[in-house]
Length: 376
Image 1 (spheres, helix red, strand yellow):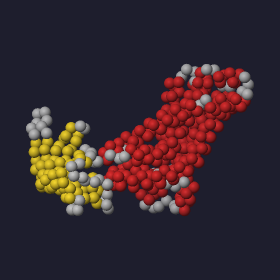
Image 2 (spheres, rainbow, N blue to C red; image 1 turned 90 degrees about the horizontal axis):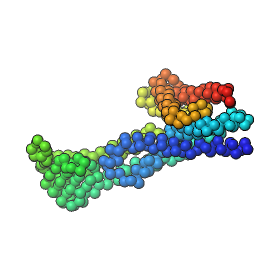
Image 3 (cartoon, helix red, strand yellow; image 1 turned 45 degrees about the horizontal axis):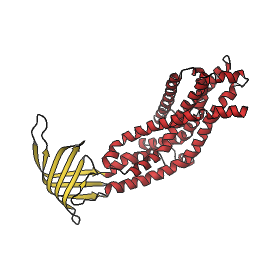
Image 4 (cartoon, rainbow, N blue to C red; image 1 turned 180 degrees about the horizontal axis):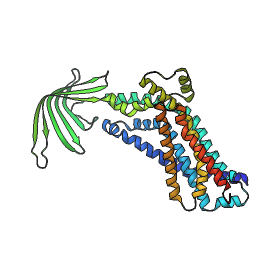
């Protein structure tokens, strides 16, 4: 009987937890992709490379969203137990309060422990995949082959066309350049000749048009415009496009396991310079986050179970709002603690672990209160 009850209480939160994990991960992932949407759309990056980039992000995203999912999943499950009077029935049947909340705590800490070891194995692999991805993106974006009689739309909003191309001297003849705005032509540039070259040192594609004209279509209340130019140069910084999408992520998240981070930090005290100290603090913060956030999965379970029991009677909307508020509070405390650590007001360990301490205290107080309430 005890085994069946434990299994029931353990498995019931799994479905809402998985759904919440999918929801939160999708929201955070969408936010990341919106930031890079101009790069992805503007550089015509192949879909397989985009999917690999998402795979690189997943370990770090799950590190953030898993505690959220544990909180919401357990809160909803125990709220439903209370709403259907299952908790009261268990307590009336002689089941102790500790046995009622124990499965939720076991589930939370079990997920946290699994996340700890899984992240330690996958984060270095994701970093290596990111390095490979950056090289593939550079090759993809720099391999712009100019072909005669072919439109090139690799770098929107421009579409290029060259009637003739002398590969030996990298010279173009009969050039048309369409500057697009949505589906309409914003500007048409014509040039009888030009040159194209790729600078491998700066990863920049240069195209120079010679002695051409710029045509702007007539718009409401305006006349057709025509302008002449001697030389007009287009520069497409391929390296910047790639670094905007991948490079910043590689700089932010080191490709080291937690043990490797610990050894590095132990052997390298904080540098004296501001930039060096910030880089060291970023590594120290990452070292503690990889343990603090998985542990938070168990700590939020310690909070979510009694809170669900207290608020579960027909208050699903209230439960959701409270869970969002708790999630926001946790990450506000985490961001504040890290900010104070960066400014030197707190040690890095204190700044990162402070929200976990608040969760632990709140969980113990809530469980003590609910256990002493009538019926528990």
